[in-house]
Image 1 (cartoon, rainbow, N blue to C red):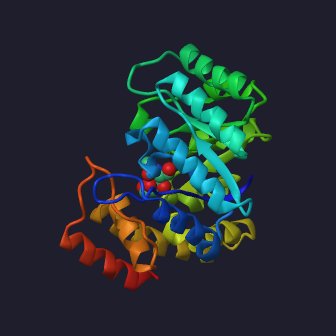
Image 2 (image 1 turned 180 degrees about the vertical axis):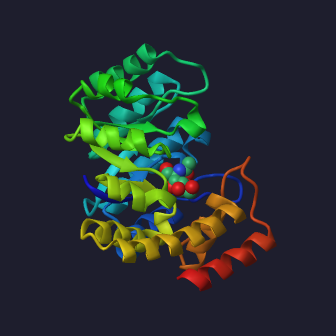
Length: 288
Ligand code: MN9
């Protein structure tokens, strides 16, 4: 389960309905062109928290069908509706997903005991492996080393997707729990995360920039830090331009330049303007 995973985008049509053909093209592009080790399905990048349960299931099914055993698949099934998480978790487990992942329950200020109960209940009901999705800047849920230790007591919790710029905590988790898988969640911090020893990374920009990400990861493992730094700088110039132009819209526009039908984002995300399209074309020509 180690390596570089694309957080899959969801292709939508102009009305915000999921576009099966586009989703299949996105999966193929990641396998054939980017050559990622795996795909993380229905995460933040997939605009998951704006989808119905049926749409989420449909995406799990399409991706599994298109990937056809060629790469690892992680299903993000977290929701503040615990029943929905369990239903999705069972669905993805039956489809044969390699692991589940669930975002920490957000919006309400749940206690740590409640968060722990959420994970242990999903695991009990699905009997699949679980990767915690920790993204404090979006969820407001900030867990410390002791909290991770409590959760990791469940042997089915096999790791964490750590989207958090706290490198002290990241190093402590890797050091304290050497048997757990730790994935870096900020693409712009892949190099320092690789240096402290993460097992892999899961990110949105890998849909277009995954080859550079894989190279950064490999160079660090070989101790070639100068070359890795150069590639991370190019990567971060790219990510900065993407963020300034609208994150998911721009990754989708770049994918369209690659000939992939990545489609529209779902409202309330706004439709790309002509200016955004022009910038995305320039980014594509500059970096790819
Ligand atoms: O899951 C992604 N997080 C979100 C990982 O999209 C919220 C990252 O890949 C970021 O999009 C990326 C740009 O900041 O690092």
